[in-house]
Length: 144
Length: 449
Image (tube, rainbow over the protein chains, first blue to last red):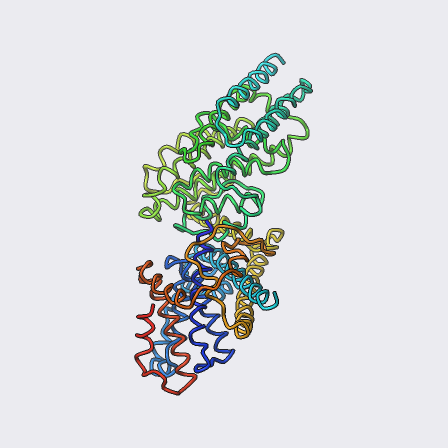
């Protein structure tokens, strides 16, 4: 039961640890880039912990990958990029929710959407707690 | 009066007998509880026998409840609540529909997530969930009323994963069999009991009908996933609920509901054998197939919404789908913003601290919880782990390799490579200085993985 949290936490830490070898003075990284990296690794560890069974985790991975592609690719494949599955999802007042949840617009079933939402919320909460703990531990380590 | 006295004393006898025969973990707790139970009927009046008996049942339920909780997890309520929130989701079916009747929030979350947690049998969790969920409500009358409904006749009980429930159920069975001849007495309850009982029983029966429909409905939809693992579980739960309905019919005054529950009881053994959905139309509802299916669908959605409501803080009081949806959306957006903000904070902190992240990575996952100020999943690593010892960078480098070998799945490799590649890409775009040749960094990093 705690395994999910543990997986998420350790994966996140593992991803964060990759920052360190690249923080040598020969390769300085700007703060914004580091922030982006940390953000993406946060989502990546969330998606990792959730597993490929979830629509939102797959969409998150896709989103991360998409950002990583070269910007020029987007122009070349503009057509392909635009042509996304434009199914007409069953709305039921959940249009806004679909926008927020990654991959939500591909979910047709309303019940499935709510399920994914609850799952996503749980992993998000976990992630927030992990990061808060990390921040507090680092700041404690600094002052303590 | 004689009959009532007889049943009370036989009840106590049974209690004593069963107490002796049980092997519960914490006898002290039960001793105190049972002594309280035994002592309570001593000052009874003939008129309040019903109440007393219901109280007894309720308190027995607390014993079962507490033992059930002990069996499930050794932590306290809050910890349990928080620790299992982010537990794994095995199949989509396992998550909300397995949740029992309407419960108090704590029990709801803890037990719902226990059933989710991917333990071998979700049904024992559900069963004890029902037990404890029923009991957890404030007010003895409600609890005992539910309990008396719950026992029924041939209570199939649990598949016996946990030692306590199978032992608990025959007790309840016996007690309720004693109660059942008193079914007539139940029709003249006290003023105090009447409104709550009659309020809750229709809720229970309807929610049971709902759950039964939802489970039976999902069967044809997800046969491959569900039937393999959950067939017997679904059957058990369905039979449980049918017994609940049946017993509730004893207390309920309406005729139609009695007929309904009896019919449903006869119907339940047939459901698993048939392929199509058995949905029972409620009184005063259209029996159109379309409306039935729609109702089932709506009920499924509302079930999951309820679960979501418990997750999102401050959503319980709000009634109405639109407002709740707005709340949920706001919450999700706020969480996302929090993640963003925290990542910024983390990057600034790391800049200063030179990233002692390798301290935090440990192979073993310690199971001690961290008292966080947030309500939510509790974390396996403690502050001590963070502060302790410096692991070398080599150890840190080992980890990705081990990770790659341990998790052979494409999923994790994908993720790791994605992030790694991405970071490399970032660097390339940022610094046009060609420190590494183009294709090499990604492959190089992958090897390192």
